[in-house]
Image 1 (cartoon, rainbow, N blue to C red):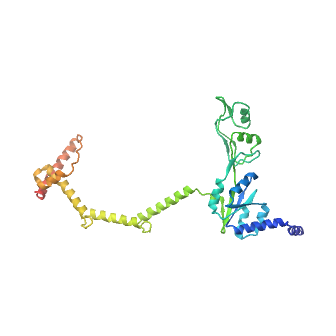
Image 2 (image 1 turned 90 degrees about the vertical axis):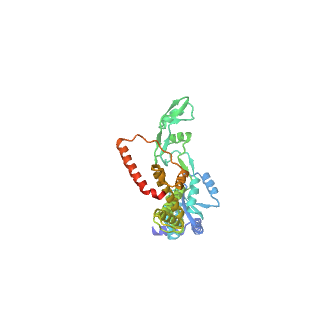
Image 3 (image 1 turned 30 degrees about the vertical axis):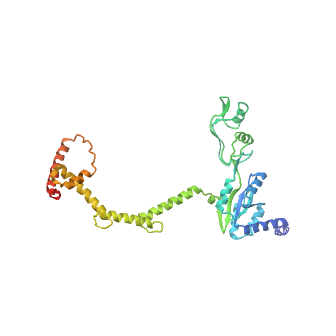
Length: 342
């Protein structure tokens, strides 16, 4: 047995050796090596895909056994890629960013009819509603394929939405033909990027599938929250220092005004506040006793805007009594402060 293996290894065809060496050379030449699935892709469409990727990526079609040999003869990191070699496989070599490459390959995929004997890649659903078919044998064909159909308004209609094949089911010839006539194309054709190797790291396709808009929104939200946290906790940073200084200046100004601290920057505000309070008090006193304020103050009161009086609702007896008490208090205050304005 050992002799047979040795004899077999000695007589490996030269073209296979050359193929393995070429793959190893491509792996070392390009910054990125990808394993792609090509199952079910017609050779004509595969040629179109290769043409579309020309200048961006180099697709290498070869036997899986030769891919295994080439990977086994490469570095330890590259050897990890062998677990992604399965079924119909091709190698892809490029210097492009792996995330951008994945996006390009996904964008290049097209939908196609499923072939008889094909495996449903997902649940295949036929929707309820009218079709473009005129009455005829098609009704029986639909029914025979498990699709409830009838005739309404001179057209063939599908009477209810139905899953005609679940993911993993084998689609028979009858159903495949009907789905094609209904223009239901459940098969996605394109290069299926299983994994890529770049600079010692292997990226599986699920890691390369990034929703860019969600990623950008998440980053924006994170920046906003970090900014708010820095400002609210008064943590100085390059991005927030101007906001923190503005906030601190505003808070210190408000504190000085409310505490009535006399400073050059707020003296005008304090004087305006005092003047407004004086006029308000003078208005109350003048309302009780016109002679209690000076003529100068009366002029200021006359020049100040008047507040519109709202009609008072009928007050209960208790409220009227409370109002009389307040009026007596105001009269006492006015008598005591009258000298300030006389």
